[in-house]
Image (cartoon, rainbow, N blue to C red; front, side, top):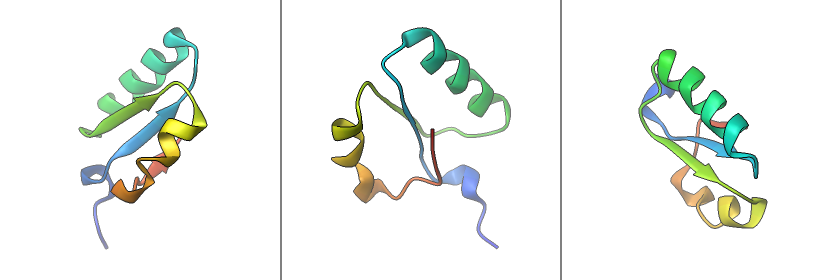
Length: 55
C-alpha cells in the first residue's frame, strides 16, 4: 500500500485562519507537501498533481 503522506494535500479556503489550522494539523500527522488555495478554480488548475487529500 502506498504511503499517502508523500503525496500532496490540498487545502481550499478563503479564510487564512482555517487554512493555517488545517495546514498545522496535516503537518503534525506527517504531510510535507501541502498546497493552499483561496478558491476552487486555482485548486482545479493544479489537480494534475494528484493530491491525496482535498479539504
